[in-house]
Image (cartoon, rainbow, N blue to C red; front, side, top):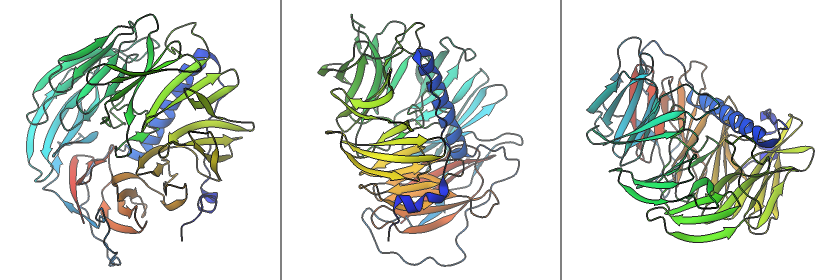
Length: 492
């Protein structure tokens, strides 16, 4: 029988790090804290440990697992190594692994910020191409099926804009196609076919063909310039929340999840919510919100306003900083404002027109509030949860990975906890979840597959210690494991 969240998490308590900050400086500080906290979670999830020895091969369980019934999508039952691990020289390590179509992209830092990036055939393990640079400073790699992107920083981080370059490469050959100079104050939205940039200094919105770099359209700032921008997540998308949601900002720890829906959402200084076609720039709808957007990078900015925008299956959610504190709503209504002694921590869309808000109290307790986004009605309040972490959503099922030993929990569409363990993970497809746990205290990982149909688990094998964030899709799992880049195929 599934355990209720109250019973499941009573012993898992986790401290929240809420600070009562005010003003635009507070908003900037909250953003830095949230990014720092989420990077800490991601660091715990990635387990960024420097390895000196060779990795350990996947091993099968000593004791036979029970044969579980077939499901649709088919149940993941095991892992099969693909080819031989790709090894680096002594003293080197792989930092990132990303999947681009039928290729695995490995990224390794060289010297004082240079890089070596290698593409491997995910079905054979054969090396396809290799590129490198001694220039500094490369932060990491992001990938879609049609582009491999390397992020390079040109100056040290500061309170001012940081100059950056995104290099776009052909996944088939490694050849450079184009580049985009920008700053970390600009906002970027990565679509499977388009890259959109909102230029902070001018308010101009520019859209580029992801493959060729050709400018598709441009929209001037106008009298009421946009300040915030996001894509529209659909129910079928492999998307994560709580990791900064922008793998182009820090690909060293975050994965870029390209949007598939063609709606681009912008919020203007005066609070208009504008939805454009991301391929053409054509405005599809405009709604006047309740308050205007904040410009957290401008000194002397209004200390109140919309701080961020998130869009899911046609519903636009706005997080707002007001004189009463943080609240979340849609353009036409406030959905939730924390009441003392509870403090608002984070939120995630947890289904069509459903919102889950994470709150903490006196740094000792945490709870989740599930809300109907059309009426604001509280559908369920669940106490004794570990807090907020990295969230993934598929077919209205929510998976939370809390990092730092906080564990992973899988919730059904009604907010009921159906499975948990002490690892981290994400969705493989609509019917399967992958979790990785350190069970034996030897830094190796036990990989498990959990069905979202009957919530039964299968032990898939044992992985070596990893040196960066793993990546997976419905076919393969890849991990940077010290000197070795490893690939496994899911067996069903």
